Image 1 (tube, rainbow, N blue to C red):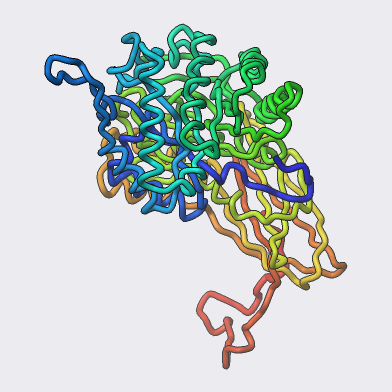
Image 2: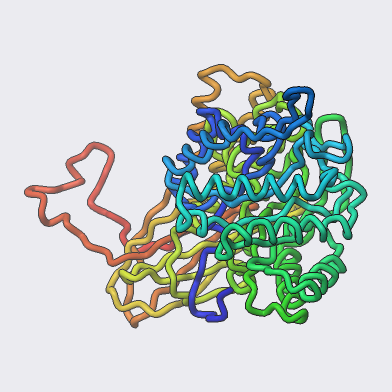
Length: 507
């Protein structure tokens, strides 16, 4: 948590989420990850569905007439080795329940993650112990100590934990954390990974941890701004979103509640965040999604040490295999590597500097170590207004570098919006290679430049944003090397003159 209001931190650049870990066995998964990594060098991937049966981690086999539990870490080793090859570490989410250990048959998602408690708590503890020891033997204790561990996923919701049984989850947490710490006390373990407005879980969980004197290295929670569903069909859910400041207020409230319970020094990790919590919500594909999340990215470092965006790509199958290219998936990258507006949101914010020069509800202006000024501004418009949807941002900051070269990237309804082009193409389920090429081209931000005059030691920044725009602009010292070209005369180029129009505002 950053208490210094002059320093900009990037907790959302630490970790990203994705579909269950078995998708890491696909080449497409890592192609999308490498694309994301070019603009945001995350350290962790949250490992969802770690123990699902398609990875065959636990089996109950017949040996000499007796049923015995057998572990098989073959696929997990492949997955974790591939993460290491890509220089990223796992954020280990313990779940779901292997069928061989489960007390019931309730499952979640198309790939049937079992959400029941273990039939025998000792068998669960044995699995946690064996797998933790295996990782230490394979990767070394110093490496595994750098992996955050999280116990389960959203146990306060009946769909993810049978009956949303709080007492059973507390037993799960106690059993898991004791098993891990018995192997290596320095491994970091957290919970309860809840989602939604059931804040009594926070008080109850922290009271339980204190009474039992259990370790809690990270408090984990999920954060979405989706509210009442407007309409749900068999394939799509249309969901209303709260105002952009709502998730920030919720984040602040969670931090205050943790502190009030005596855990002020415990880091807060948001292990999932996005706008809608549904994997088939069209808003995820839109410029509004990016503009809506901008303020959260700008202010989240004040309240949390880590936020994990859910998810970095549309390689995602919780609600069956998607049929359409743009289907409202969580990802910032669509199928075929097509970049969504939210991808550019993270790229823009990751390019900001560390020192905050100005911040309000519409923009943040920062300074990098080399003196370059970098800013992100946003203009979310929730309703389809017919009036003028533009907004103009005006900020003046100190500047001692002479005239400034201004470079700007823009994403809005017109630029960097492949979803709009896809709609105009007739929403093809299986676009041709030529269509995909056009969609990739349309996913690129618009670029502008200008030279801004500096006469008084300040820099006047003026940015006009269109509807649902996110914009990035950086300002560096202007250097004119035109005199280095012998005989340079633009007037001799047909259709041009020597009027460079050097003093301008970025519109």
